Amino acid sequence: MSLVTAIRVFIADDHPIVRQGLRRIVEADSGLRISGEADNAAAVFAGVAAAATDLILLDVSMPGGHFLDTLRELRERHPTIRVLVLSVHAEDQWAVRALRAGASGYLTKDHSPDQLLQAIRRVYRGGKYVSPTLAEQLASQLDPGAQRAPHELLSDREFEVMRRIGSGLTLGQIASDLSISTKTVSTYRTRILEKMAMTSNADLVRYASAHGLIA
Image 1 (cartoon, rainbow, N blue to C red):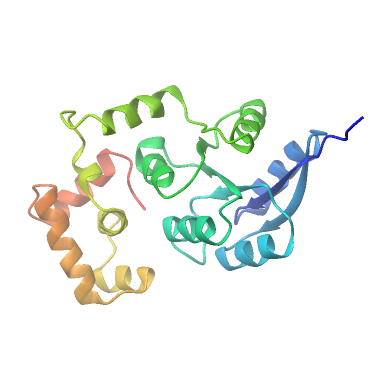
Image 2: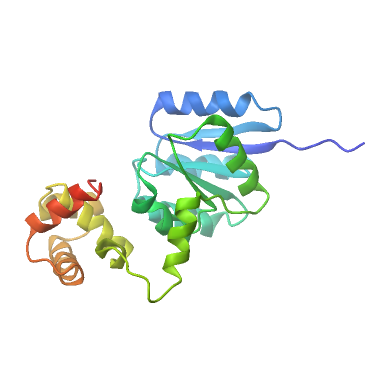
């Protein structure tokens, strides 16, 4: 009789209370076990390099690296490890971009423990985990005639800059946050305003607030 191998789950979240809660959920299931934990991007890479891991629960807002860059690098370095993104951000902010960057699923943190366990197993088996709302959003992305929100027309980096402008950060603060030059941020700002048919930072602040895109 063959033994069933437990799914090895790595928890990546910068909040100790959240990590503790996730650990309890995982450890309460006999089919899962914790392979490691991390509270920043560098620790994630070090942790999964040191411990055999099947699946990473990756928080969107973890420090030490930009979320999509971290996700892409994880997929490049460890293509066999599945990534399930956990986030407090609504699906229309990051989900589609996360899936495009290599995530196998996107789950907001207001879901139940049972839904999390279901998502882990589906992703581990090679499937994708998305909500019905997100599935509809993904389908609309494939329809060239579908109407899309202005912020969905932005590249990933433009989207990150737009969220920060919408939060009231200066160009210098954004440059420091994203490790790019102020001139580059200014160039992104110009592109963003053109793509979104807006004329000022105030327009972006109003839009970001109305759509829940505050960084």
